[in-house]
Image (cartoon, rainbow, N blue to C red; front, side, top):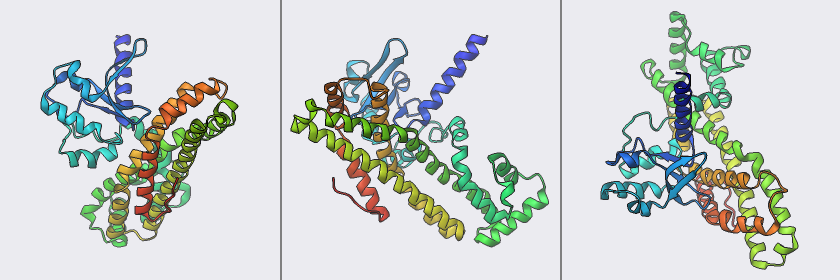
Length: 351
């Protein structure tokens, strides 16, 4: 019984990890006619190409094929093939950008919770969320800062069993925001979803932040080696990747800071109109933020796996990895980031 429970726990944990991943799309909730296909998933590789992962095993490895090669492995209906081809064209598989992209493609998941983060991820984001919840609670409920130091205290305020006090708090909030009392529960739900998306993207970025710093040092060493510096083409490619990575990391930080600034403006003047403006600004950036972060996370994660420390690999091996795995698609990520920055009124950089 214990073994079965452990296997089930591992299966649930793996399913949650796939659901929360920025580079993976389980097909179990996609309206496909083939049950075999529903047991597969889409994954992005380091070149930002979408592959269909037929199976993955810790011992035998992973079998990933091109979406266009599916018919060589299984019977695929024209409808299923068209859906897979459409999904393969997406730049990111995070739940937030998927919401708008699937709607645009006319693909409706069979499970309404498919485009929600797992409870495991929401727990992981708790510390990030404190910064978004605390100012709102302070502004609306007027609680002292001593009561707002942890997520449990914040949740207790929002779930206050004192009905009279809850009603009074809701009345105060309605008066301050102009939001009708009956609409406030939905407001909290929508606000929670907006700040969770920003917390998720910040978490995804910070998961590779330190690795990006190490990568920039690593690629600088690669460029300085005589076997690389003596090849103008290889040297130029390494420099281009390093410059693009440095730009992407800095620009994403700036965009995330811009979101934080937008929340602070909202907290200063909380009302229905200011929330609609905040929500529109954040949601319009889901697709581009997801796209750029997906590329950055996938590339840096694979690099970290191949080069866990700066001593591994010869200069030639390192340079080959940069050219074959990191350079493909890197300029596309730069273009996507520049386009997003332009829409936010941030600086656009030519590389």
